[in-house]
Length: 102
Image (cartoon, rainbow, N blue to C red; front, side, top):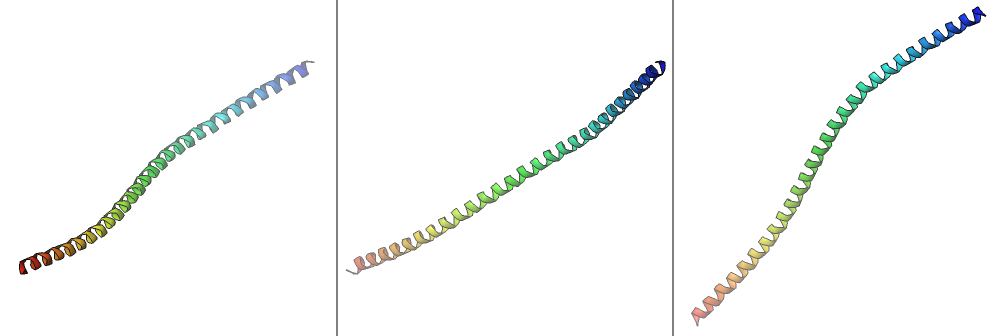
């Protein structure tokens, strides 16, 4: 019976040592994971900053393109208005000339 009790104590001691070893291994894994999590967090922050800047640039490009198109439309309208102005001016000059000639 003493041998059985001794074997039980040895097994208990071995299981406790195994449990401690597993606990230490878990702590080591958590520590490695903590470092990886921190690195991933930093990468995510940088990624978000880059995405935000890229979005700003894209928005600026869209705004610039819209301004350029608007400017082009205004230039076309201005050209038409100037042509009409010149036509009206010429017509007015002819009417003045006709009035003077009478």
